[in-house]
Length: 607
Image: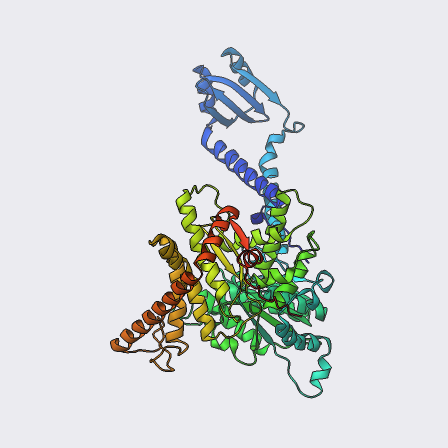
């Protein structure tokens, strides 16, 4: 990777010294000139003689016929004299101190200082300008001479060590990008049949899922130069700078073709035109127009330039940017599925000392919705936890602690609960756990339950998916509703009172019920119709809204009644689990199955 030189504005020490010299020299010259013009008063020869006769002259210095002197009031003067013997006699008579030097042989360095200062100032200014022009390079620069230079960083093939094998998961995305790699390696294979490889590939996905890593892997596989730049690097307050940077970037890319240009966060510059403050003529839109022109018509000699871009907001991009001929292909980079999460964990586990007994598949099952960056952070947090406890390796308990910390927050030790509060919390969480144990086989099985406060929760019950699910049945959704209501039902059954701890449970249950009624056609009498909530895509009458509310209430009441009845029928198990949880504080599913004498579920593993 080329490393840009530091400019004066970037704090380069050499240029800082030069700038200091410029400033000091300029100040010295100004001081010398203004001091001379302000304090030295030229007088005539007759005035000089009169001042001597009045005894107002204190001291003089004679150089040839030029005289510089000081009056007794400390003011300075200069004049030209006739250089006669009578002058020296007059000076002696009035007690004037004087000195004489030979103008032909004397040399006074102070006469050269203004000239020397001007020379140093001119040289320093020239040096600063030359350094500023030379600091543009591939790294751009923040001064007026390199403002139009691209800020893209150039990575040569020798410095790119990332391959597709280093990117775990995202198999479909890698398959799509292999076409680009094959074309960059063997363009003649496609050209013989007249095929045109996509000029631009847009990587779309949520943050942390590996879009940048995929782009680098493409460059590593193709063994070609790689220009990396952020969309915000094109935007400046000065009009025309962004467009100039785009031109410079593509000009550099043509010189290094075949190569790859990677623009991260392209939505910073590629947003829909017409929405800017400049009425369509602001700096961002001019930059976008230049990018459209470059991508539509750029030609290369002896190679090709492929543009990869990444964004998590494809909905805001300008339609002209997405048309065929610019970004021809869109590659989705989704959250990793169960198998991909296991592969990602395996990759990151190689960089730490992991206990051989750790089952990373189980960890992968317990992290649905985690991105690749989240999984890397999970391993790192577990390593930090194990290090603080002076362990030799990372165990499954460290990974569990790290996951809970990421999802719920750090364990709160400052909360002091009364025995009554702990008991209510224990029965609340036991109600969740017991209902989860009683649910059908296709629902998510119980993983663990704890009454240790974390974040804003006094206790948590975890369910762990056995596999990646892409559809859910009505029975499974009802099971999730009943499990969410199990906490409040247990409180009412045992203590005959309700607490505010069920707020988040009701929130989750209400969301599921409304999805069933409004989006999935699972209501009893509302038919197979979507009733959108909040987007305004579908408008329905007040009467229909009342029917929706009534159906949501009916399902919720029915689920709550079934939950309460299930807990009543298994009251002995509820009491036993709650009392044991009070003592242990955290229990895993295997312990609970054994405690309650329930046949454990068979754990299915994926290949």
